[in-house]
Amino acid sequence: MAGTGTFFVGGNWKCNGTKESITKLVSDLNNAKLESDVDVVVAPPFVYIDQVKSSLNGRIEIAAQNSWVSKGGAFTGEISVEQLKDTGCKWVILGHSERRHVIGEDNQFIGKKAAYALGQGLGVIACIGELLEEREAGKTFDVCYQQLKAFADAVPSWDNIVIAYEPVWAIGTGVVATPVQAQEVHVAVRDWLKNNVSAEVASKTRIIYGGSVNGGNCAELAKQEDIDGFLVGGASLKGPEFATIVNSVTTKKVAA
Ligand code: PGA
Image (tube, rainbow, N blue to C red):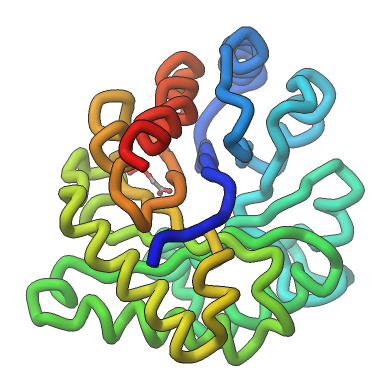
């Protein structure tokens, strides 16, 4: 069963950039020709969200890379969902592997964050994915299902969620999952949604792939039936290359 949602491409700028480099990136994005039938989102570091919001054209929406788990207040160093909305964010990336494995966020905490953000009207890019040793131990599906279940247990609805399957061994390594490897997990994720949420949610929810996606490998990945877009790290820092990835939707149309 293929997905029925609009192709979705997110650029995760992570902890990169300066005012100057971001001015150039935004200008390249504003000048890029992007296919119309793709939802496009970029996630700048918090401190540059305002700069990006005021200079990027409205074709591209803005995501934050994280958000606090509840209403703001005495939480030093955190950024609340309310503040993100105030600066014009429409989305937030939650459960990214760097937050899970470097910062130590667990499934339940991430589920709570997703529920809070959705409740306040932000869309959530919900990241899941296995470590290399988990893949090698044959646990890829189990790990992804546990991470999905934590989201499912917490969220009131899947209407505003995009799932990003990002195998940790492929993130920032240059080792991209093969189209077959990615498709296999995307099918499993969609089946999980069908069996544990509903057939409607399984067909409507975008399942995007992340992990060393670039201008050269995006077309082959996009052709896969259950790959509904991408979450892009390193290659999203280059405007023209990011545009190529957005426009890989045309490969999908040809394949369909
Ligand atoms: P990458 O990062 O494209 O640099 O591998 C992807 C991500 O972490 O979302």
